Amino acid sequence: MNRFVLCPLVLLALAGAGRAAAPAPKADDPLGKGLDDFVAAVMKEYQVPGVAVAAVKDGKVVLIRGYGHRDLEKKLPVTADTLFAVGSISKSFTATALGILVDEKKLTWDAKVRDVVPGFRLHEKLPSDRVTVRDLITHRTGLPRHDALWYCTTLDRGQLFGRLRHLEPTADLRERYQYNNLAFMTAGVVVEKASGKTWEKFTGERVLAPLGMKRTNHSVEDSKKDEDHALPYRERDGKVSRLPFRNIDPMGPAGSINSSAAEMANYLLMHLAQGEWRGKRLLSRANAEQMQAPQMVIPLALQKQTETFAAPGDASYGLGFVVTRHRGERMVGHDGSTDGFLAHLSFLPERKTGVVVLTNLHRHDYHPAQDVIGREVHDRLLGLSGIDWRERGREMTRRVVKLRDERKQQLEKDRKPDTKPTHELKEVAGRYDNVAYGKLSVEAKGEGLRLRFAGCTVAARHYHYNTFVIVDSDDLPAAMLEDRLVTFEVGKKGAIGRVKVQTEMGVGETVFTRAQ
Image (tube, rainbow, N blue to C red):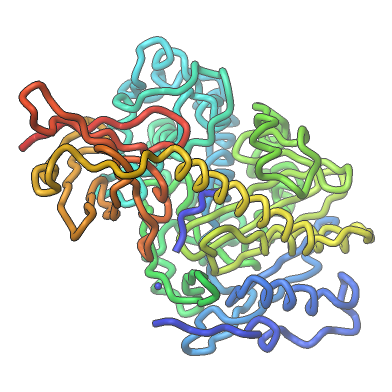
């Protein structure tokens, strides 16, 4: 989630679908002439089936519009009420729920998590005793992402929570920013313990209901029952194909909310009003301001790798929101990413403007359509021009592709050619166990291997010696773990005893021990 490029399927060609389905421009368009053409051009460039856009200014909704198709096969149009997955924008809903509990003095932002949830444990005792609620929602617990643990999980939220103690950190507490979905899942557990209600029930009653977000839900299973919901799609090698919905309910506080442009506009207006909605206060001004204030600096190196829309050095993480800049103005918001959906929410607090962009496509590499459209709408709300956001988006895509290609080139450069494994593939096959990730099943498959763990199945080909490399395929787990290394170790008796899987890029390996 967020820029979590996992993505992913009935093949369809999509030439020009976005342009054909765009509504006709309106003479009195509040954002000026040409916005519909701009959105249609972005949709065509990135082959996006459907887009929904909402814009607000000075306490009012000034635009809600749907473009393209929510269902390509049936040619059903996107409307203002079409439900899309909003992905990691859900994190701000969780932070809002925590803020309400802080207002009610059932929590403080700096309360020790263990004081609220006694069962909370990390890998080491000292951080376990010191981690605060604020630490969880500013990505500074010391844990790397470990997304492979939950992405295809069959575990429930409580079981995932119990596995945290087995995940090794890669930094000390508060040492550096490391985006972490599991920490936000834990923040949802804090909501449950402090409120006495599930995260779903509390956010539904205290955030969604007061804002009139009647169709917004917490699970794709609910979206599928709604008559007006977008289907998820994936683009690869120039072809767009349908994806299955992925249920991530156990990780709900980090990314499972689904909503529409019309209802997300209400959410935007509430945060622009620092917690007030139609004369009633949902969240105190003080805690709304806390959410929108920088809390943890996003490392400059990471900003340089991923950011072209704002100058590197401008990005920090607040409480469930990213704090950055747009044309010199403070911009607060979050992007969201789940299978087949990308979303963008941002607002300029000092200018009282905000934008939501919802889309139903993932690409194999990366596409910034939702960000490009969002930046263009902000410019129109401010009456500014002069920046070609489509070209900025292309620059972003080129950068991401370049980084991926460089990683592949380095991988090939490091490979030792003309080597072979010490054992036949059938001798490598078997079951291996890890206390956090559970069972790893290894099977010989042709000249390579098939690995199953944490509910994911991936293929691997021989790399060198006893090391294999995970290869991409149409399966999303393989896309997530593409180019990660898998190394088999020989025990004292000459048999394969352990396997190390590079579940996290750039950090240590996860070790599975042979069980049979």
